Length: 255
Image (cartoon, rainbow, N blue to C red; front, side):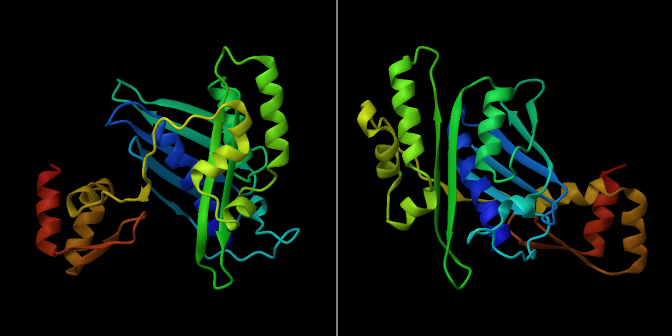
C-alpha cells in the first residue's frame, strides 16, 4: 500500500505536468532517487496525460504514521529530477532535494526553485481496506506574473481550508469540483479537459534496446548457455521472449 500511495502521487503529478507541455512529441520524466526502503520511483508522461511508472521496491511494508500511510519514510532522503524532452538538442533537466519526501511538497519546491514559478501542489491516493486503489487525484496551481496581491491572499486562504486531497476525493469530488473548492470564489473558468490513463508504449523492438545495452560479451555468454531469455518491461510487467536466434541477430546487428 505505501508503495502504491507513493507511486500514485507521482503518477498523478506526472500526468498533470505532462498535460502542461505544449507539443505532441514532448516527454516528461520524474525520477526520485532516495535512500528510503522504496529505493526510488520513476514516472514518465506525455502531453496527452498518458503516464506510466514504477517503484524499485514495491513490497515495502511500514506501520502507519498518524493514521496515514508513511510515504515520507518509505521514500526517504534523496533527490527529485525532472527531465523534459521537448525535441531540442538537449533535454531540459532540473534537480532539487526532497524537502518532505511526501511528493506534493517536493514538486512545489521544485517549481519554486528550478522553474521559479510560485506553485501549490496537492496529491492524494485513497486506498481501500483490501489494498486496492479507490481513487487518486490532485491539483497544481501556478501564479501568473501579473497576479494581484488580493487574489494571492484569497488563494492562500482557500488552500489553508483544503487540508486533505484524499478527504475531498473520498466525498466523490470530481476534478472540476476540486478546483471549485480551491478557486471557486476567484472566478474559476474551465477552458479544457483531458483524459488521463496509464499507458505503456513498450514493444519487443523497444525492449531489445535494453538487451543490446548489456554488451556483446554478456549476450555471447547467453548464446553459449543455449537458453532463451525473458525480459520484463519495468513499467507494465509485460514479458518478452528472446530465442537464441534472436540473440544471435542482436549481436550481429550490434557489430
